[in-house]
Amino acid sequence: MSGPIEHIVTAPGIQEFFSLMNVGVVVLAVLLFARKGIAETFKSRSQKLRSDLVETREELKKITQEIELSRKYLADIESEKKALIQKVEEEGKLLAARLVDEAKLSADRIKEDSDRAVSAEFAEMFEKLRAELLDAIISQTRNEFESENPQQKLHERLIEGFINQSAALSKETQVNNLGHPQGGNA
Image (cartoon, rainbow, N blue to C red; front, side):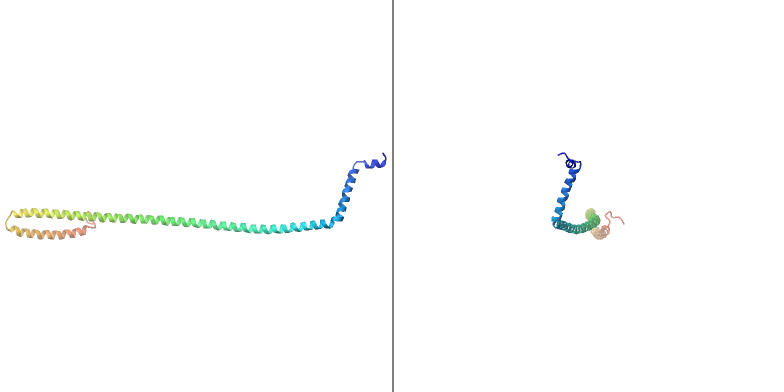
């Protein structure tokens, strides 16, 4: 069979044409019989994609709102942190100032206590020295007067009066000098 039909069937591109025709016939048959099912499938698929898109947009809005709330919350936390840091710094400064003031007061009290102790010790030593000096003067005066005549008794009385007056004056001097440990004028 080597006739004109054989030559047409074997011509270049004819087999591809017939293959394409066969596929077209099959697709046309499928479209005619399954057209309703395919349309419904595409329609349901389109509706599903639309509903998924709407849900995705709503989720995106929710997430965006949550992100904004989180940003506001972080900003609030940051401002609270700054306020707390400033408050702690101010309280630290106040505490440091109060500690310095308390230390000054304590130092002043210690100085006052030591001044009082020195004044008291000075007064005690002054009184002791005065007493020893008076005892020595009295003893020496008695010894001198005992070796003398009867006028000596009269003289002793005068001396005792003088000593008593000196003691009173000494106490006044001591009271006046308590504020001044060296005994000088201020």
